[in-house]
Image 1 (cartoon, rainbow, N blue to C red):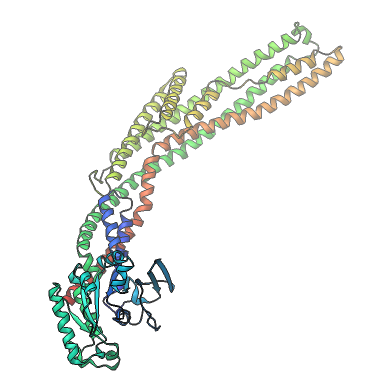
Image 2 (cartoon, one colour; image 1 turned 90 degrees about the vertical axis):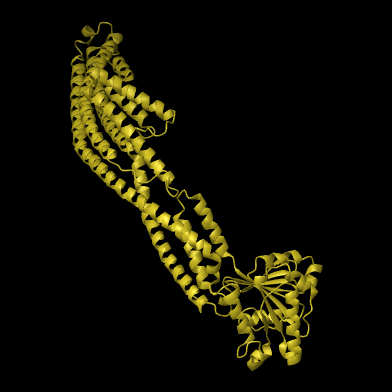
Length: 599
């Protein structure tokens, strides 16, 4: 970092302090410490304020020259001195520019390191400022200033307007400078100094007086200064540094803040340590739960795939049997004998066959499905037993009254209680379903889905046994598969077949049209076979995936909490390390300041 030795300020301290406060603010971002956050914001605001120097004096007293000399040419940059009108402020900027704040008030930005963190205020004649209605603005700058340079020109130390202003200011930050001393005799200079000191006593001001002259400085005429052997400008620099703003100005202003920060950081470290321990404990629990669930998923996958294959074989066999039974009845020579009522008898027959086979396939699918679901839910119950056991062993390390993470502790405790409740309710359902008869199974299943829909619609917080929409999907899937499959062949196809067969006028035409109808029927059965198989297998997959989703959703809040802390903890840890490092730097600067003050 660059350091400014031209006057009484070291920018390095300000950067370290500001960086520390920003890091502390970031570390407190997701905490409950409202008072501490506000404290850090106030600290940061105060440390962000510039060290402000204001020069006051008559027109032509040499204020601009004095400021430029004190800051080693940073203000004028070698340009000729112009009369200061109103209030003129100098600051550091990334680009050299001038900004008109308001009438008779301008701000110059200079690319000079000497001005980093500093505001230098040059002023016009106080009498003129009053006439222009700018005395209020001037007093505003003076009140927030750190150093007030009262500038008098040799042989002109009477300035009632200036003394009126000085009497209202904080006397501790006033420094008197007597300029253009080379233009008077030594005897006159001594008289001016005596007069100034007398006026100071009358105003109740105890402050140093530094006679200066740019010509003396150039000529190195050090023997006529107030302090023999020293440069008046350098005397002023050293005095301001040691006695007004301090050799470490930012730290001097922030000493009380630093003490508060140290206390707060110690408390934050203790709370953060508990948060880390809570995270590591919860992460271990989640790892165990994930392991149990992953193992269950792998084992159940085989059962689901076997069920799907069995159902596919049964559907194919049933539809093949159904097709053959219908085709046997379509002997052209016996159609009129078998269906004396014509079209209506044929339609009634196919409807009866459809109902019979629909029931047969549904019964077979239901039995296979229920058997697998019950085994699946029995295994789920075991997994939930294991997961509940992990939760019961969970230790709550974060404290509700913790001023940094109390809300986090409360949310984690609530999350654990909700998860435990959800686990217990799910266990009851899984146990009941696993042990139920076929009739009772369907009743419990329907009751379970109805309860989930009611709770979801009512938006009951905390108890979630399925993802949004899952209950509807599961209810529909279970109803479609366990409550009955679709009609095998549609009424439209049956009507088309009947019209074709019974429109024949001769046996030859009957044989031909029956053959065509059988072809259409076979094609329709084949289409139904593919469609129904896809529907049933997709329903089975959806059903079990929904159950997995329900089970996984039970741990969603806990998993989210652990994962969020898994991302936040390392970031916070780095910030805490950075904060500790910056605090060490500040401690070293404090120690350095104390050593300098002791010299």
